[in-house]
Image (cartoon, rainbow, N blue to C red; front, top):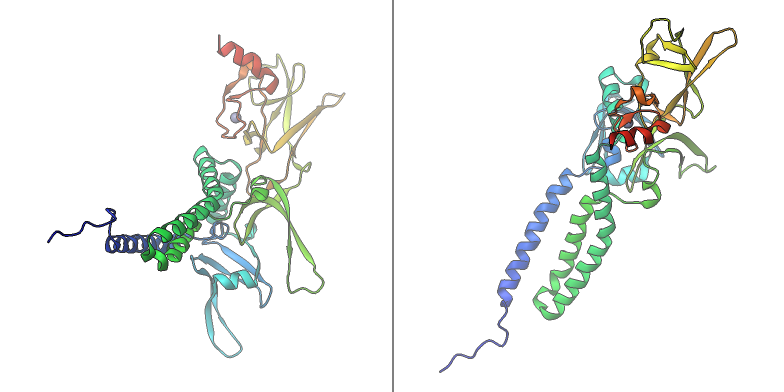
Length: 358
Ligand SMILES: [Zn+2]
């Protein structure tokens, strides 16, 4: 008796079932690993530092900050003995409690030990002068974020389509969709175009206490370092725009004095101001955060000050544009996205480029 041929030559129901099971299993493993590994990137700024936590309810806490994917821990410097005589060594917050209770986290620069101040300074530097890789990574992540909704919609549509043709999948459909979303969600700390444009820019952050009946708002001035769905990270401002950072101590000399020092400020034709204090070691940047204002009085005395061009965060390196004449130009490694390639006066650059190209 001939065996009847299967109507559908595609994979049978059992194969589909096991393949689906395998996909769900693998996705679940990857999701679990990523969930263990992923932490809020704003909180990560403070990981390992001594912080102060202000809460909407309950006392303010301070201690060493630990960040996990499921919450945070604040480890007290010294065990705290409560009125009942119980020794407490740390405080745990689950993710949901962070959302409900925490108003602000602070890291006070002046209270950090030198090693932590240095690490913090590196963070500030990396935020304001992002290297190529960092910029690429940020761009990539934002790209993934914008695609996420499209992916989710596509996964949903595909699953629905699949369910119609393969009834065996009807129960796994929702699992696949939600796993897909969780998986994509791990890569995607919120992308918010509104905030993204202000990364590295001065901002005023207003924090409202939801439990305060007066709707009082606390203002923090600083640089937007990063944001997530839950937090906004800001580096405090040390110097406001237009503020004098330092007076410069120096000596006036004139062409023909026999001094050869290119690291002097130009005051007037043939008159220079040689910086003799620590301002001498301020680096050049093609995108500086400060400028030098120098002037020569009629009686031949000079004065110079360094003035903030924009708000400068605590720990951020102060820089100004050396604006060398073309004859003194040298290669620049300031790392700014606006780097001209040479330490040179902006006005002298077109001529210098022309010379270089032939
Ligand atoms: Zn440069």
